[in-house]
Image (cartoon, rainbow, N blue to C red; front, side, top):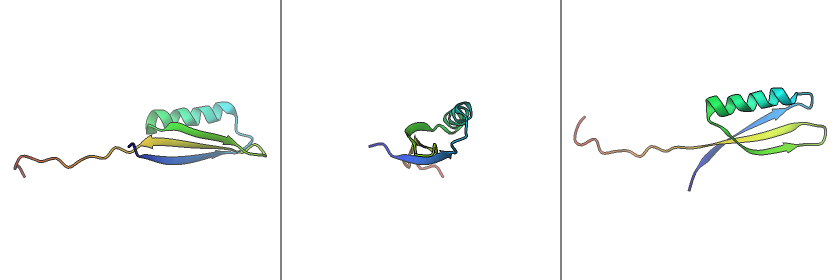
Length: 66
């Protein structure tokens, strides 16, 4: 089963759509985040949840080398 870490971004009601879009694009492109959920609350505040997969490295046998 995949494990994810989550990040929440909150935007004020006066944030423009282009500013929000640019922020989400930057997070996706440079931080490898993907959109998980979006909510718009009364008063216009937007809360956006991003997620990215946690990649766990398994220890490998080094074949006797130090």
